[in-house]
Image (cartoon, rainbow, N blue to C red; front, side):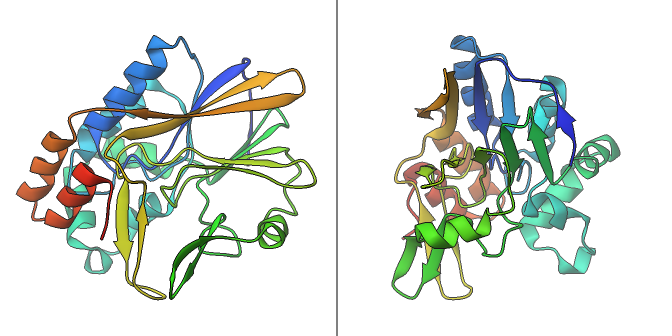
Length: 251
């Protein structure tokens, strides 16, 4: 864990790009248009059947604060353990891209106020959601409090589920998931088959503004050429991704 410089009064939070360079470009253009100079990136940057190399180039050029996600770490697994999209991703990346990814920290504390993480390294698969046979539910306040009890910072930034949320806990902690920049829906098969869905194809991110002793949170949805991203996914034999990208639905 490392300390970084104090942020200015406003910052943008992005997460879960998954190699969708076109969605990332749209989100960054919107952030720049708003004059927000600071960006925090919560990981899962490149994995997917889209444009991992172009996404890595753009992130390295912007030199924003970034942490490592579970789908970033998996790229360093043995080849036989990788899925087809994971192999595609790694094959597209240069040694410079992989070195950048390997050097990213798992968590960062910013100015004693913000705990920055991907959201996968807690005592539950998702910090804010629980998977049940009936679907995906918001975890109870007590369960979330127990998961973050050891974190001293008042604001926790997490991604991983791709579902935008702002959660306020009774003891004053604020947890913000900005949603996914590049993958608005997906399915998983364990522990039971389930879907994460945002409901539209927009590139998502969040804005945080410090207002005296409180934080104002704004969730932003940016349109972009999701049809083009879907065409690329289909060309890489992922028609499921294509459907997720153009609908934001996974069922």
